[in-house]
Length: 173
Length: 315
Image (cartoon, rainbow over the protein chains, first blue to last red):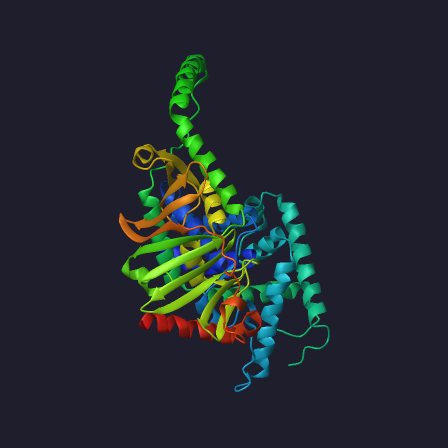
């Protein structure tokens, strides 16, 4: 398999999982997009542009994918914390240190906060964090660069508001 | 990083970045690469997609228009000669879907041929005998392995359940089915209505002529995935549909990779008499006082299912 795929895969799946709110569907989207890119490898310089094209394809696929599709959960995933790090059942025999609990809570809150954002806002915020500039995000989301900046502003505002509401004063180290 | 609220807008990017990095650390790269390789192998079996040619120069448009008219005239004739089979196949499968939506009990006997890699999933194996009872979206699968009966199914709320032993059963909500069962349900579950919808939306359907002569009253429909369409769990299917009642008498689902059959499942209708005492709910398939492990006891549920899977593999 080409090295750019191996390198891009973890970030791409994390991104798709966040957009789809489901690890199984995220993996499915990424696998599908990689296959489609490779099918048209002759048209592109994939070692150079592959990562960017892959994220563009994932963005389109996630936005266009019908939300009614079935979610699945891997049995293998059930032994470790779900997205965001919260355990389903508390292990009372070995209580984790407070900072670990705090970090897990924060991860869960970020995951849930991202899910509250409209898909385009979530996508723009994560693409920006992954290093894409406004022009590139605008191209991927088929909006104007100015709109991207507005979307990003609103997404950050909404996330901060959500997190502050979630931890309203009762988060102790 | 400051974890203390209040969070400012400037802190969102580092927080989300840290979250995404954490998520990407949990990605099983090797498994995903293997899945991509498998998908590419399936794609390689399909004929290439015809790409649109460049637009012709204007001066040739008139000649092309004339040619197109002639081609259309010939094409209509060709369509009348060829298309009815295809159209009938879609109509027939559509009618079969309507027949299946009726709340009637039907029982299919399942035979399976599995490649070595697929035998690791014990629920896919048909054992000595596997029977699938189905009523609309509900189904109940019983597999007999050396005298021991294994039962699992799907209830009216589309919840998947498995009987671990007469006193214990596990149940999954419709949106939390384990990956192992996602595939098993796809092949063995015989949620026939969903399956026929898949045929109608994602497969090319054709009637096999020879079916008429061999078995009067039965029409054989061959389904192959649409070129360029979504990846499908099986590469071909063969349906024997009773022309009069539109009931699927026999169905064969085949998954091949590199011309090697990975899994083949044949369903043959053996009974369609209404079953008054048949239940598709987990409660009714356990002994009285049996315990159900559902979403609220996820860890115990996973442990029970793993234990059952290990036992079945040993047998």
